[in-house]
Length: 308
Image (tube, rainbow, N blue to C red; front, side):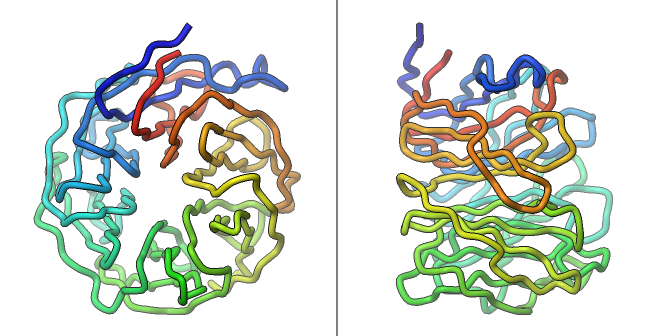
């Protein structure tokens, strides 16, 4: 039996036992957390250094992001809002400037911004990254070129610009353009992980074709397309994590009325592992252990949230 939550919310899917989940559902229950209208993308990290995962949420309408401090049981405290601008398309949380706190990086349909953490889970005003354009849609932070600074990878939802762009971090949280790689127009979702076990972070990116492509890192920060897989409909959200407890990093992809986990053969080749086909509009996925058991859970945003 399922219940429909009338308010727009972020849905947290709690992981079931990885062993028991082989060839079965990976997620056993969900918790809804009310935020502002149209939550679109979420990112998870410990913002206030209390050892508990917190959540930041970008909104497709409205001009603010929401930050929710975690309680440690999969639920969250009421949201605190920070002004960014309308049409927010993605949000990422990481330590980008080498201090002891987690910063936020937020994309809108025209720009990308950084927000510095005050050290207590509250954030300073947003600062725009200069020169970043072409409808940024999805952003990820990763050690692309092997130094100690998290670089920025940007997928673009544009009808002309066909490239995935990479932006170098100078170590202080300032980003400048580094390189670009052709994957196709209208890029809708992206995830980063070491999919082949060598050369650092690789990338998987989806488009409206609909398909998703795997790009492998050459070890010096350069990328090439390893494989492209067709999908039945446009991918709306992606995340990468060790969902099954094995040695390799898997990916999860949300589409309309579908959440699918794809297993990895260890070389960056993917195949369907498990599907949850009763969702509505799954716009975003973010993986983390919210309840302290059974490995990575998944937070999913949706226009209407279903509770199982």
